[in-house]
Image (cartoon, rainbow, N blue to C red; front, side, top):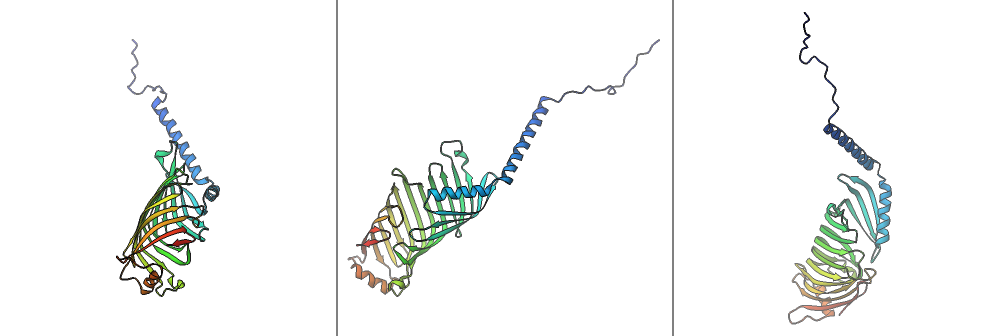
Length: 299
């Protein structure tokens, strides 16, 4: 009598099953991710930043009246560009240069697939902060805050205008065209004019205090809607127009300004004012300023 052979459960050889479709998908996705990561790493480590620096300088120097010098351009992540330092050189009306530290440029992601993509810019400037956005068609928005300034006055190279830009906002398009709309607002603090000794005034400094400016324009014609100063040796109010020229020096003014002397005004400046214009019954001085920035005429 033959006895049937019994096999213990689990001792038989398991048949090899092919990997499931889900496993294959995971494998392909992992390979794709590794490929993308490798390409990104190659881009960041071997990107020709020197060539990009030269290209950016070429574009800015060719499209604007300023010269640019970039230093230490690098790529960041998420995709962005970083510059440790870049300098703008301006020749008119007087040779002048300004240096920006640690600037970053990032894409405006919501515009990349549209017809007018743009970039966002952030930079440190003379201890203050600058931010802005520029689109492909030249539209730009710029905001500056807590930026000190010290620059010669265009019409009087021996005099200097200094202070702090508390806040400044500019919306325009570059280059300016006849249909370009622009808007400017600025608030300045501790504004003063120095170097008065060089024009025969005993007191070397004239304080203007806090200054606010608001204006808008179309094309090269700019309307100054508000110009006010308070807290200094004068209280100032006024407005008018500014017609932009090919250079800053050639820009033409047409302003009406009212000056109200404060008790802190020096005797020398008060006497000089009386030589130009006698005060009105209310004690204010009214002036009209015309001509160019290089050669203004006070009436």
